[in-house]
Length: 88
Image 1: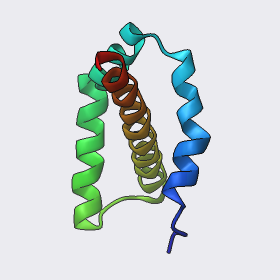
Image 2: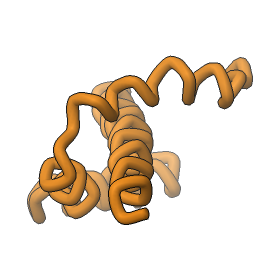
Image 3: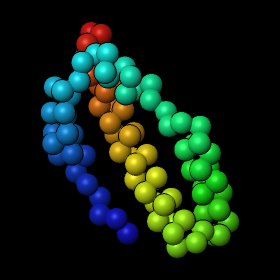
Image 4: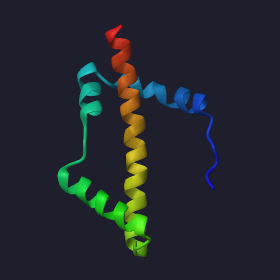
């Protein structure tokens, strides 16, 4: 079981990264999607995970992608936050 985090503390600790983004960079980050081959591999591993058919190495690979996706979701949320303040 994972330990819950204080999201306010997390935001305070990570919002400072916004100072490094230009508006154009933030837009590009929000629009980013992995390439087709990467998306296909993640879908393939997800299907195997749902069936309980992952090998040890595949599970490690899949968990790496899951972590990367969580990171990108946060990174993109920060970029959207910058764009929202830039547009107002």
